[in-house]
Length: 228
Ligand code: NI
Ligand code: MN
Image (cartoon, rainbow, N blue to C red; front, side, top):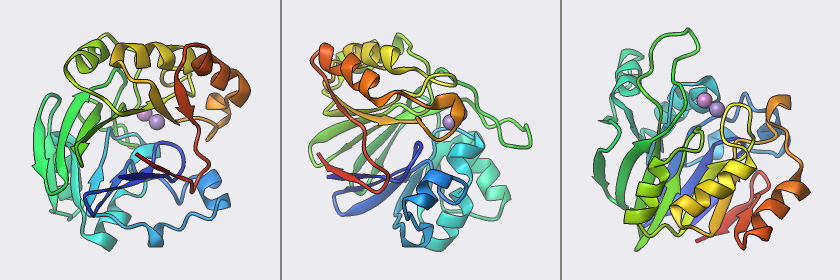
């Protein structure tokens, strides 16, 4: 499988021949635009949405309508999507699993908040545990460090964990390194950093934190892919 970083918390993965987009936010992300990411070139069979904040759903309807992808997200976000006139959805709530063509998608707990940009309720936030091609990937979503990650690590063999490292609104890199210990996962892909002033990171310092504890931190350039 393959994960391409499209900036902020947005990835396009290819698993079992299907395209899975996480938290579409491209047109409003100056860094993604500067890196030449064109939303009209993004392929999606599934769109997974962790929570309702605008830096995760801004391009959701645009991309869904263009691709006719199945949106997998919380019940509340799916209901909101239906109200906007788009019906190819599959609602989950935390703890629930959906079998999909490429494997499975389980919605996990995230310690964060979730509302739409007009302030309306978007359910509780989540992350996703993805299986496919015999591998397991954990996409944390926006979250603080939390002890549920120990449970995830205890009962799953996670190949790569995609974790926020930008701090301020989510875990910082110190907490993300602890999260990786909880998850029993040495391969980390960074997200949710540098997009805004609030979450700018010192790349060398962050890399040190992970290498000192024997972990592989991948800070992908926007547009860069990693084969897993
Ligand atoms: Ni958020
Ligand atoms: Mn966010």
